[in-house]
Image 1: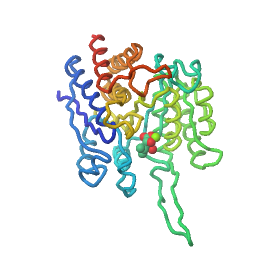
Image 2: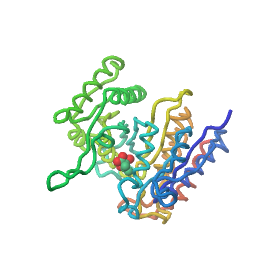
Image 3: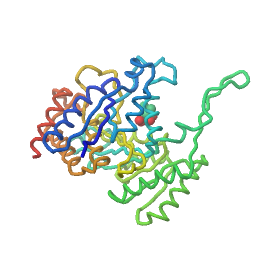
Image 4: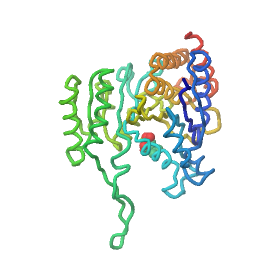
Length: 368
Ligand code: IPM
Ligand code: MG
């Protein structure tokens, strides 16, 4: 059988630096675990704009639709701030999400024991934290029409539309319930049904999917503002949080910071399964392009490496190998390996991006 294919879109800023370490990890699995991938590389975001005048070339879009999984680094940077909205680096990422129809975005917020002191919350509130945010990713206010900036009388009006169909809510709710069954069996759905009709429909459809097909999963509903408050008050009350595109964007950054460093958190964006049962999928770290540290060898590659672990689990059904990689990361952190973003108040000497890669590869070797 042919090897599964991976398309790597390293993107901008620290994207290429952290992805450099991921490719070493991918090679390790090929050499040591008989798990070889056919890897190809292409451009996205500002890098694609510089080369082609568009943040995502049509050929790249076609390759992404063909690949068994896409790994993305980061997009954007100050150099592109003044570009027209339609060609901003972020548009490349949004086009990938939309055209691959990646409606279910999984963002785990997990606290590594070795880093429990890094949270801005008290240690006991976050030690052992393990939340999964399921964010709807292809609809809502990010894509709703009408949108734009129009003239009205003697002033301009900015317009965006929050829009959800029943089927869009239904399919993302199912993915949250399926996931919950394999974890803590609890889903908390968040919207603003108190002020938004789309929130009322969201709540109704989620409840119906639950009652019809997942009655064994514990379901609760919360207004998203209360959800944000509960996330910083008592985050361990949550298992799976299900929410829409915009609330999910905000709540997932909030949940991510509970763990102390954005440099640690991976994500998976999944679509409907293909004929072979494998979902269309894109994996990316939650952190951005970090222009302030780009090119200095300081970036933490762990979020991007853990995104590859999610690819092993969700695209390639290699849960055990994913766990092996996650354990290797835990081990190097427990042994005290720290990139600059993980320097506590007590200080110390940070290691470089490549040294973190070295440490993780050594821990993988030790796992054999
Ligand atoms: C994210 C990011 C993106 C979003 C940007 C880069 C378009 O913030 O993935 O959370 O808003 O979805
Ligand atoms: Mg965001």
